[in-house]
Length: 99
Length: 200
View 1 (tube, each protein chain N blue to C red):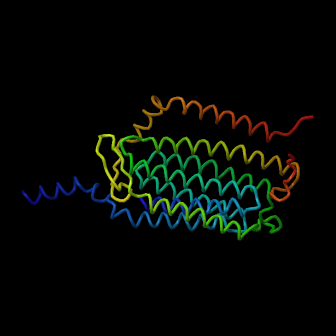
View 2: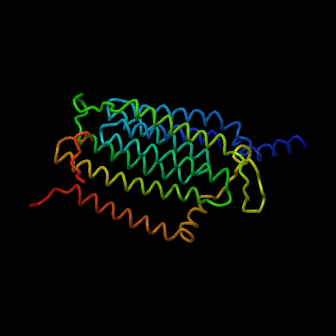
View 3: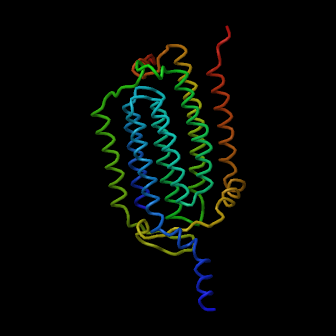
């Protein structure tokens, strides 16, 4: 249990590092997928070791997988749109949002 | 006769013996090392296409970990959705938007020290929680109170948990299931509407 949690923690930190360092938006999305996977490992491990009578953790991570897929689809569509408009998908040039 | 009885007993008990904690441990370490190394390569490689390939390897290892955790349906869903759909979609987006072979648009790192500090801080916080909050008192569904369960408890999921997942989705978790379906439909329509060429 502790081993699974530790591995998931390391994977989550790797994903966080990737989100912060990548300049390519697709790289950021891939690091986000890593973080989602770390969370899924945590949920399934908790389900198996803490509350094995019900399958709440597995169902929850199933929903997380589906939502992550939806997020990736919309994110990649936005990336393609950005590329079509500006021919550039690095995030240091995308600073046009005003407030 | 007694000898044969012993052998039959051993054969019947074999799956339980093979699937013990001790014998799955090398598989666990192999899978997690694969996952962590490929995850590290995903976030550090210069070529974004190579990191997409390593992302596929990493997601496969996560599916293996799911099988070790007795979540077979989740492992299958992981392979189908992540490896089969999301990673391929990423590769498509990379090849449509980036000049992969030329080194011009390769990503470089920015804000490296701050990122390292915050990642290490997050890792430290999570590890602190894991290491210190181990002694929890919790009641099992049967009413048995256990203590310090994070270290000691050997959870055993029911062997027909795929069937149980189907049952739960169709009964108790019907509403989230339908909401997720609507969300998928909405994201599909949104992606098509975003990526379509404007016709003016």
